[in-house]
Image 1 (cartoon, rainbow, N blue to C red):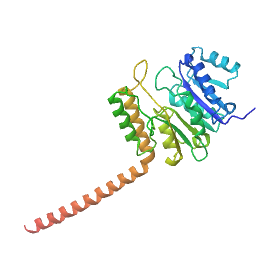
Image 2 (image 1 turned 180 degrees about the horizontal axis):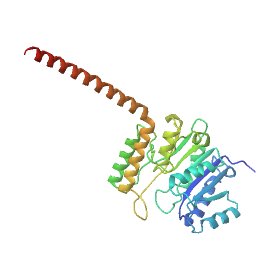
Image 3 (image 1 turned 90 degrees about the horizontal axis):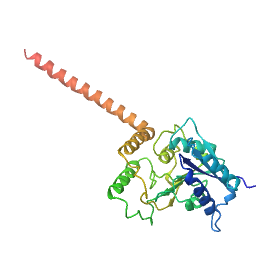
Length: 281
Protein backbone atom coordinates (compact mmCIF):
# COMPACT_ATOMS: atom_id res chain seq x y z
CA UNK A 1 0.00 0.00 0.00
CA UNK A 2 1.33 3.44 -0.97
CA UNK A 3 1.98 5.97 1.75
CA UNK A 4 -0.11 9.13 1.82
CA UNK A 5 1.81 12.10 0.42
CA UNK A 6 -1.15 14.34 -0.42
CA UNK A 7 -4.20 15.44 1.56
CA UNK A 8 -7.21 17.30 0.15
CA UNK A 9 -9.12 19.19 2.86
CA UNK A 10 -12.77 20.03 2.21
CA UNK A 11 -14.56 22.14 4.83
CA UNK A 12 -18.29 21.45 4.63
CA UNK A 13 -21.61 22.32 6.16
CA UNK A 14 -24.76 20.71 4.77
CA UNK A 15 -22.97 19.68 1.58
CA UNK A 16 -24.07 16.05 1.49
CA UNK A 17 -25.41 16.38 -2.05
CA UNK A 18 -22.01 17.51 -3.29
CA UNK A 19 -19.76 15.01 -1.52
CA UNK A 20 -20.16 12.04 -3.84
CA UNK A 21 -19.62 13.95 -7.11
CA UNK A 22 -16.77 15.90 -5.53
CA UNK A 23 -14.87 12.84 -4.30
CA UNK A 24 -15.45 10.79 -7.45
CA UNK A 25 -14.35 13.71 -9.68
CA UNK A 26 -11.20 14.26 -7.61
CA UNK A 27 -10.13 10.63 -7.87
CA UNK A 28 -11.30 10.51 -11.48
CA UNK A 29 -8.93 13.37 -12.32
CA UNK A 30 -6.12 11.72 -10.36
CA UNK A 31 -6.65 8.46 -12.26
CA UNK A 32 -6.17 10.03 -15.68
CA UNK A 33 -3.14 8.81 -17.66
CA UNK A 34 -1.59 12.30 -17.67
CA UNK A 35 -2.10 12.91 -13.93
CA UNK A 36 1.19 13.91 -12.25
CA UNK A 37 -0.03 12.46 -8.92
CA UNK A 38 -0.70 8.84 -8.04
CA UNK A 39 -4.28 8.52 -6.66
CA UNK A 40 -3.05 5.86 -4.21
CA UNK A 41 -1.01 8.58 -2.47
CA UNK A 42 -3.99 10.89 -1.92
CA UNK A 43 -6.53 11.14 0.88
CA UNK A 44 -9.60 13.38 1.03
CA UNK A 45 -10.68 14.74 4.40
CA UNK A 46 -14.15 16.23 4.83
CA UNK A 47 -14.31 18.55 7.85
CA UNK A 48 -18.01 18.79 8.63
CA UNK A 49 -19.59 21.17 11.13
CA UNK A 50 -22.11 18.63 12.46
CA UNK A 51 -24.44 18.95 9.46
CA UNK A 52 -26.52 15.86 10.33
CA UNK A 53 -27.59 15.70 6.69
CA UNK A 54 -26.30 12.25 5.79
CA UNK A 55 -22.73 13.35 5.06
CA UNK A 56 -21.27 10.73 7.42
CA UNK A 57 -23.21 7.95 5.70
CA UNK A 58 -22.16 9.19 2.25
CA UNK A 59 -18.50 9.18 3.21
CA UNK A 60 -18.78 5.69 4.68
CA UNK A 61 -20.40 4.49 1.47
CA UNK A 62 -17.56 6.01 -0.58
CA UNK A 63 -15.00 4.34 1.67
CA UNK A 64 -16.65 0.95 1.12
CA UNK A 65 -16.37 1.58 -2.62
CA UNK A 66 -12.61 2.01 -2.27
CA UNK A 67 -12.20 5.80 -2.15
CA UNK A 68 -9.66 7.04 0.39
CA UNK A 69 -11.90 9.56 2.08
CA UNK A 70 -12.69 10.18 5.74
CA UNK A 71 -14.82 12.66 7.64
CA UNK A 72 -14.17 14.70 10.76
CA UNK A 73 -17.37 15.86 12.44
CA UNK A 74 -16.93 18.92 14.65
CA UNK A 75 -19.55 19.42 17.34
CA UNK A 76 -18.08 22.32 19.32
CA UNK A 77 -16.39 24.39 16.61
CA UNK A 78 -17.80 26.34 13.69
CA UNK A 79 -16.39 28.33 10.82
CA UNK A 80 -14.53 27.90 7.55
CA UNK A 81 -11.05 28.95 8.64
CA UNK A 82 -11.01 26.82 11.78
CA UNK A 83 -12.25 23.84 9.72
CA UNK A 84 -9.35 24.25 7.31
CA UNK A 85 -6.85 24.49 10.18
CA UNK A 86 -8.33 21.36 11.80
CA UNK A 87 -8.03 19.45 8.54
CA UNK A 88 -4.44 20.54 8.01
CA UNK A 89 -3.52 19.45 11.52
CA UNK A 90 -4.96 15.97 11.02
CA UNK A 91 -3.74 15.47 7.46
CA UNK A 92 -1.32 12.61 6.79
CA UNK A 93 0.17 14.09 3.63
CA UNK A 94 3.14 16.43 3.39
CA UNK A 95 1.31 18.39 0.66
CA UNK A 96 -2.11 19.71 1.68
CA UNK A 97 -4.80 21.28 -0.47
CA UNK A 98 -7.93 23.18 0.55
CA UNK A 99 -10.93 23.39 -1.75
CA UNK A 100 -14.63 24.22 -1.65
CA UNK A 101 -17.29 21.51 -1.40
CA UNK A 102 -19.92 23.50 -3.31
CA UNK A 103 -20.12 22.27 -6.89
CA UNK A 104 -23.51 23.83 -7.58
CA UNK A 105 -22.27 27.16 -8.84
CA UNK A 106 -20.13 28.37 -11.66
CA UNK A 107 -16.73 29.27 -10.38
CA UNK A 108 -16.61 26.37 -7.94
CA UNK A 109 -13.14 24.97 -7.41
CA UNK A 110 -12.78 22.47 -10.27
CA UNK A 111 -11.81 18.97 -9.03
CA UNK A 112 -10.05 18.47 -12.37
CA UNK A 113 -7.40 20.98 -11.24
CA UNK A 114 -6.55 19.02 -8.09
CA UNK A 115 -3.69 17.00 -9.68
CA UNK A 116 -1.97 20.16 -10.96
CA UNK A 117 -2.42 21.93 -7.63
CA UNK A 118 -0.98 19.01 -5.65
CA UNK A 119 1.92 18.49 -8.05
CA UNK A 120 2.87 22.19 -7.98
CA UNK A 121 4.01 21.90 -4.34
CA UNK A 122 7.60 20.90 -3.57
CA UNK A 123 10.34 21.72 -1.06
CA UNK A 124 11.04 24.89 -3.06
CA UNK A 125 7.36 25.72 -3.67
CA UNK A 126 5.79 25.82 -0.22
CA UNK A 127 2.44 27.29 -1.24
CA UNK A 128 0.13 26.54 -4.19
CA UNK A 129 -2.43 29.13 -5.18
CA UNK A 130 -5.34 28.61 -7.52
CA UNK A 131 -5.55 32.03 -9.13
CA UNK A 132 -8.15 33.78 -11.24
CA UNK A 133 -5.71 36.52 -12.22
CA UNK A 134 -2.84 34.72 -13.92
CA UNK A 135 -1.93 35.36 -17.54
CA UNK A 136 -4.30 33.67 -19.95
CA UNK A 137 -7.22 33.49 -17.52
CA UNK A 138 -10.28 35.46 -18.52
CA UNK A 139 -12.80 36.50 -15.89
CA UNK A 140 -16.32 35.63 -16.94
CA UNK A 141 -17.86 38.39 -19.05
CA UNK A 142 -20.96 38.23 -16.88
CA UNK A 143 -19.06 39.36 -13.82
CA UNK A 144 -20.51 42.78 -12.86
CA UNK A 145 -18.19 45.78 -13.06
CA UNK A 146 -18.60 46.58 -9.36
CA UNK A 147 -17.45 43.06 -8.47
CA UNK A 148 -14.32 43.50 -10.57
CA UNK A 149 -13.58 46.87 -8.97
CA UNK A 150 -14.03 45.51 -5.43
CA UNK A 151 -11.97 42.40 -6.17
CA UNK A 152 -9.08 44.38 -7.63
CA UNK A 153 -9.28 46.85 -4.73
CA UNK A 154 -9.08 43.99 -2.21
CA UNK A 155 -6.01 42.62 -3.99
CA UNK A 156 -4.30 46.01 -3.95
CA UNK A 157 -4.92 46.40 -0.21
CA UNK A 158 -3.15 43.07 0.36
CA UNK A 159 -0.11 43.94 -1.81
CA UNK A 160 2.05 45.20 1.10
CA UNK A 161 1.53 41.79 2.72
CA UNK A 162 2.10 39.50 -0.27
CA UNK A 163 2.63 39.74 -4.02
CA UNK A 164 0.43 36.67 -4.62
CA UNK A 165 -1.94 37.46 -7.49
CA UNK A 166 -5.06 36.11 -5.74
CA UNK A 167 -4.55 36.02 -1.94
CA UNK A 168 -8.33 35.86 -1.36
CA UNK A 169 -8.58 32.52 -3.16
CA UNK A 170 -10.03 29.61 -1.20
CA UNK A 171 -8.38 27.12 -3.59
CA UNK A 172 -4.86 26.76 -2.23
CA UNK A 173 -2.30 24.33 -0.91
CA UNK A 174 0.52 24.40 1.61
CA UNK A 175 3.34 22.10 2.67
CA UNK A 176 2.86 20.51 6.09
CA UNK A 177 6.29 21.62 7.30
CA UNK A 178 5.46 25.21 6.34
CA UNK A 179 2.03 25.10 7.97
CA UNK A 180 3.54 23.93 11.26
CA UNK A 181 5.70 27.08 11.35
CA UNK A 182 2.65 29.33 11.56
CA UNK A 183 2.29 31.40 14.70
CA UNK A 184 -0.82 33.21 15.98
CA UNK A 185 -3.08 31.82 13.26
CA UNK A 186 -6.51 33.40 13.34
CA UNK A 187 -8.88 30.44 13.13
CA UNK A 188 -11.79 32.86 13.18
CA UNK A 189 -10.33 34.90 10.34
CA UNK A 190 -12.02 35.58 7.04
CA UNK A 191 -9.43 34.53 4.45
CA UNK A 192 -7.28 31.71 5.79
CA UNK A 193 -5.00 31.62 2.71
CA UNK A 194 -3.96 35.23 3.26
CA UNK A 195 -3.46 34.54 6.97
CA UNK A 196 -1.17 31.60 6.16
CA UNK A 197 0.81 33.52 3.54
CA UNK A 198 1.63 36.19 6.10
CA UNK A 199 2.03 34.15 9.28
CA UNK A 200 4.04 31.34 7.69
CA UNK A 201 6.28 34.06 6.26
CA UNK A 202 6.16 32.53 2.79
CA UNK A 203 8.51 34.31 0.35
CA UNK A 204 7.08 35.30 -3.01
CA UNK A 205 9.38 32.94 -4.91
CA UNK A 206 8.00 29.99 -2.90
CA UNK A 207 4.45 30.49 -4.23
CA UNK A 208 3.33 28.31 -7.16
CA UNK A 209 0.36 29.81 -8.97
CA UNK A 210 -2.03 27.57 -10.91
CA UNK A 211 -4.49 29.45 -13.17
CA UNK A 212 -8.14 28.42 -13.07
CA UNK A 213 -11.38 29.92 -14.29
CA UNK A 214 -13.79 31.41 -11.78
CA UNK A 215 -17.17 32.56 -13.06
CA UNK A 216 -20.45 33.98 -11.84
CA UNK A 217 -22.62 32.21 -9.28
CA UNK A 218 -25.21 30.17 -11.16
CA UNK A 219 -27.71 30.16 -8.34
CA UNK A 220 -28.28 31.84 -5.02
CA UNK A 221 -27.18 35.27 -3.94
CA UNK A 222 -23.66 36.64 -4.02
CA UNK A 223 -21.67 36.18 -0.84
CA UNK A 224 -20.23 39.66 -1.28
CA UNK A 225 -21.99 41.79 1.35
CA UNK A 226 -21.09 44.82 3.45
CA UNK A 227 -20.46 42.52 6.41
CA UNK A 228 -18.05 40.41 4.34
CA UNK A 229 -16.10 43.49 3.27
CA UNK A 230 -15.88 44.72 6.87
CA UNK A 231 -14.56 41.34 7.99
CA UNK A 232 -11.91 41.50 5.27
CA UNK A 233 -10.83 44.98 6.37
CA UNK A 234 -10.66 43.78 9.99
CA UNK A 235 -8.44 40.89 8.95
CA UNK A 236 -6.20 43.22 6.94
CA UNK A 237 -5.80 45.47 9.98
CA UNK A 238 -4.79 42.49 12.13
CA UNK A 239 -2.30 41.26 9.52
CA UNK A 240 -0.82 44.73 9.01
CA UNK A 241 -0.24 44.94 12.75
CA UNK A 242 1.27 41.44 12.79
CA UNK A 243 3.65 42.18 9.91
CA UNK A 244 4.51 45.80 10.58
CA UNK A 245 3.92 46.28 14.34
CA UNK A 246 7.65 46.78 14.98
CA UNK A 247 7.83 49.49 12.33
CA UNK A 248 4.64 51.08 13.60
CA UNK A 249 5.94 51.19 17.18
CA UNK A 250 9.29 52.54 15.99
CA UNK A 251 7.57 55.25 13.92
CA UNK A 252 5.37 56.15 16.89
CA UNK A 253 8.43 56.46 19.14
CA UNK A 254 10.16 58.67 16.58
CA UNK A 255 7.10 60.89 16.39
CA UNK A 256 6.94 61.04 20.19
CA UNK A 257 10.63 61.98 20.49
CA UNK A 258 10.24 64.58 17.75
CA UNK A 259 7.21 66.02 19.55
CA UNK A 260 9.10 66.22 22.86
CA UNK A 261 12.10 67.92 21.24
CA UNK A 262 9.85 70.35 19.40
CA UNK A 263 7.92 71.09 22.59
CA UNK A 264 11.15 71.70 24.52
CA UNK A 265 12.44 73.97 21.78
CA UNK A 266 9.21 75.94 21.74
CA UNK A 267 9.17 76.25 25.56
CA UNK A 268 12.81 77.31 25.58
CA UNK A 269 12.15 79.86 22.90
CA UNK A 270 9.07 81.11 24.72
CA UNK A 271 11.00 81.34 27.98
CA UNK A 272 13.77 83.36 26.33
CA UNK A 273 11.32 85.78 24.80
CA UNK A 274 9.48 86.10 28.14
CA UNK A 275 12.78 86.91 29.91
CA UNK A 276 13.62 89.59 27.40
CA UNK A 277 10.15 91.09 27.75
CA UNK A 278 10.48 91.23 31.56
CA UNK A 279 13.92 92.94 31.36
CA UNK A 280 12.32 95.91 29.62
CA UNK A 281 10.29 96.77 32.70
